[in-house]
Length: 194
Image (cartoon, rainbow, N blue to C red; front, side):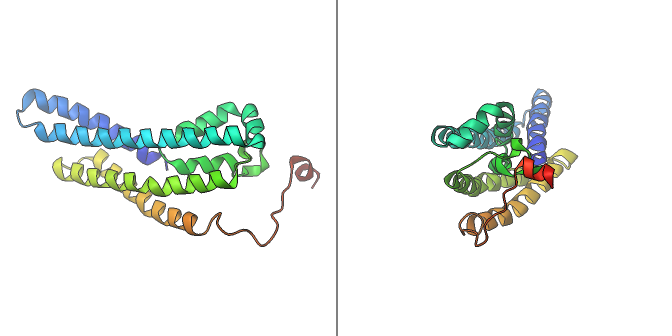
């Protein structure tokens, strides 16, 4: 869910504007300075962590997987777009090989180890989501009721709740059990003939 990140960035900009306006007129703005530093630290650390993990995962896959390297040469722009979107949520990397509508662009040949790394990185990023939720609870208690902090809190709690169940499901079931039935692979030619 990218919307929670968009609102979280809007919230940080809004707090910064609110802080500068209150700093000019009030002398009790130390709480807002702490609030800004906390939110920006959480935001920067999450983006930094996700960018490092995304870079490591994609770099290793390009170096070690010949099929992915060939796919990457063909779909560089799409892969860069997915990598940029994964700065907010690492699970977006699963979109590279989701085989949506049997299109080649969604059929990156990711290895099994990369799938597991994406799952484990998503579980680790749960700690950052919890820290963001705690900071948003503090924002809503420190500032008067406004729509932006409340929307951010609502979206983050939704992401945390659904993400918790999704990450639990992925880490426990998906990818660790080998399928008992052979997957049906249909290429474009067979799909168009049918």
